[in-house]
Image 1 (cartoon, rainbow, N blue to C red):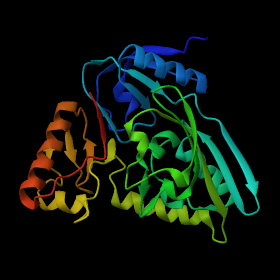
Image 2: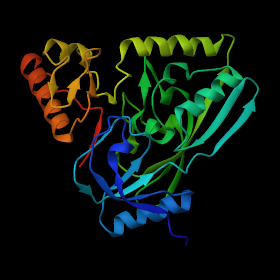
Image 3: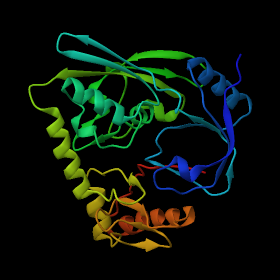
Length: 290
């Protein structure tokens, strides 16, 4: 079987949106489902952690050299569109970006994706974390998911059979989301203008002018995480080059030269303060790879 292309000593800070982290000993770039299965087998045989990499918008890497099976979705970008009546079924491989989906949505004036449009994500990572914003989540528009388990078996799963929750899915336990089918409907509204307004609102509320990892914590049932963090004095709170944003207390930002150790200390400080003040245990939305 053809050797999967890889690069050595890759700068991990280039592979996450908050721009921190050390180096990956190797990053692999599979081009098809067989190569992904090959890497899963390798990870089991070598007893190494299997780490899929997408846009990296909710991922943070530790410093030093990390020796995991890092699997980039960069070359998994096939896209297929099938129209049935007013519905469009978009089959997208794991590496297809939300920006690409937005361009399809605008071209055919499709509704259902508009409130997800500003999320910096690719399909694979978005399905794994059930990405969402403004009350909408990707599971709302999913028709089917192709998932490879850690034994290399391929599963074609109807979305209705998958147990999605708030920022959770069964896929977080392991394996690899290879592709997904989105079901979107042609709209009566002007979807481009809806997306434009939504993105303006997003820019107003979130610190998108700095490297950020998006929402740090999930919203607990009691109150939004941003509210709790602000009340706990974390808004604008800084350690080294890393801080919780002045604009939105649940967003970590890299002010320049931020280090992983600063980020970790900030997160732990926030968890402790909110815990002491409200007796609420914050649950992390970001994924830390050490």
